[in-house]
Length: 306
Image 1: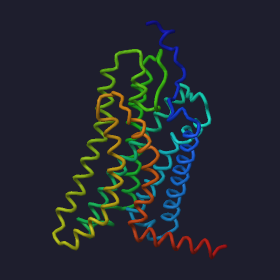
Image 2: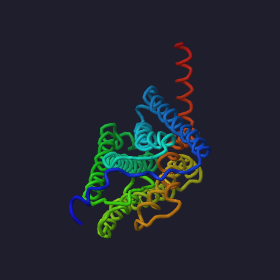
Image 3: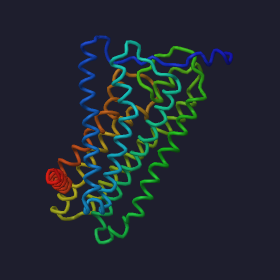
């Protein structure tokens, strides 16, 4: 295969969800509602944490504010293009745009994985070493851990992108989603080694992070002897466990297996790209009295200011 052949494909066709215009219109309204909810919920959490002195000084809520920012970035990587394509008969994305989307999807996604691990460590220190909590989880350490999460995401995404851009694409050019597994399947080359490296990267990171998170929460519950203490710990960690399961479950399904295509892959991708970032604010606020109280105070300030 010569060089000219390998450079034929410069854009991809996105398969979309349906060929029926009425269904597409309904899906547009649904996904627009999801996207607006993501922005409203996560911005509200960020503003609430920033405006409340107690929440702003707490390591847990500082990390929660950063998680909300990552959720905004994560959903914005793909959702605007998804919404725009509902109005396009030919759903096209250029090769360069696809690679950029792929890069930022893995950059922000991996950073969120690492940040959730940091949040689990924060809960471990708060519950198992309460007397040392403010000393161990200082603002300086929290900033370092958040920066490390972003750096880890950048390194992970750079590796994924470099492995992808060196592949030749000469047709077919229809892809369900601009992510590593579906794009790799379109390459005009033997991708076995590349797939193995990517599964070892994305799949291993997802699986190990999930195991570490579940192990840390299990350790917290085991170390607490009293029923009352265990009940409080379970209440505190329940929201974190819900977020972890919703985020890591689809990621492990997509990345921790050979890059074969299943009919449910598109819906699973929608789950962790659109649904989970929308649910995170609901999970953390509905189960958290401190956040709800701070939001009520913020609302009173807004009304009073008017």
